[in-house]
Length: 311
Image (cartoon, rainbow, N blue to C red; front, side):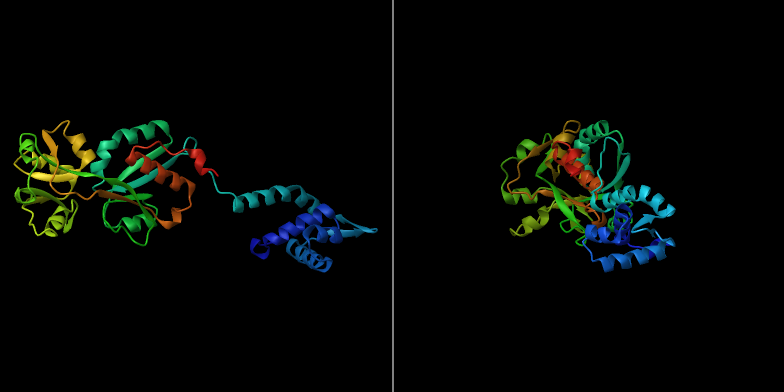
């Protein structure tokens, strides 16, 4: 017998026939006509190459093979029903699982919340969160399972993939500690004219300030550019420069580097972090939990309750 020769309805009908040992009673149990149930019995006899039910007096009795099938079929049907109907549970306390998360400039934020990653590792020792470098091929890596999540700072991340803004980080200005007091209460023109360290990845500016000043008719005095926020404070301490970086990163770094924040004379746009995943993992409980965990780490909120994903 080949599995492709049967369907689940045949198995359900077979259970009814084995329990009732009667075509008439099985038909009533299945809410089918006696003729349809009789036709099903004929198909079962062909598939199993066994009579299944044989007449004895006025009734019918099971064949030896049918008796053996009757012992095992109910459990099999329960397993099939559970496989089809139930949403699989994910318990991070019990299941060993690795999650690969690609980050780019998000490393700037990640260094400020390393305690969150450490706390997650301590609470869920079977879970391994591995950070990988974000590159232009991240949509392909999500599709082939090499990555579970990507944390992206662009405004339009992989439009064909599911994504959400996982955090919106306020921005601030930084300067050398000795320069910062004189930079408070600047006019907009003076602010634009000070030598700026611009953060840009290729042609894409990450701090968004140049375009914002240009919209007001002002040209930003860009002394030079760096590719990420991570290195900006190191250059700031080397000369009379200012830069725009995420607030949490500035607060974190100035504990070790002699820089200070100051309020610019222009409202800065927030730094948006998008979390991107592949649609194949959209309903997967483990992947959903990983997304919630990553969001909680970035936003410093309580870790997700594993039981909330078991319903």
